[in-house]
Length: 256
Image (cartoon, one colour):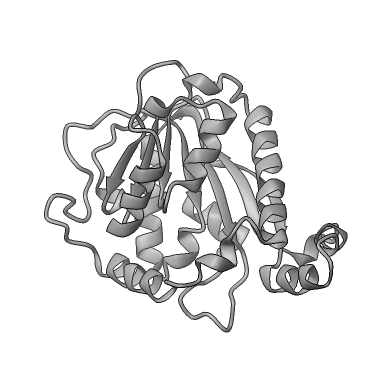
């Protein structure tokens, strides 16, 4: 449960990594930015007007609320949240609708155009920062929840993944947690991403207590099924092997 203190506070110095002030990025992040640029023009595939998209989003939202309740995050107005890779701010908007306070939210986004889109969509009290998340001056132990959604599957370098995971863990207060959503299997037709299986999640956060749930019907299958009829999404999604994503709470023990 959040303590009611202010939003994530700056640390005396930036953490080791890329130079946020100069705009320099480690090679792995430069490559990730280029991969995201290659995906431009696919926004319609993720439109909430598509039945496979809104059903996947609603499923994830229900599972996320269940995890928050199960792990004592009931005082939503007091929670301090940082999202790594906030994109255009969609997940932060979801948190605002749940009752989190804008002054307690911070989004970090590598790509300037996405950071600008987030600033335009979100209330001014939500802090949106552009740059390498691992280089941000967020004080250790100052955050209740660190959120990441399909960021790690775009990091193809193990070292970059580990560096970011260590930074996220350092930000968390004891009793807080990483809220993780990402896919677990690779797509052979898309070399720009790779799946992050649950065993890798445990490797990235060896001290964490992982509570994971399989969600989200495999997107190619969901798109094909919903072209036939939207109700096929729910019918197929009852089979766990057809779900390609993991939603997890990675808790930091109060004694850490």
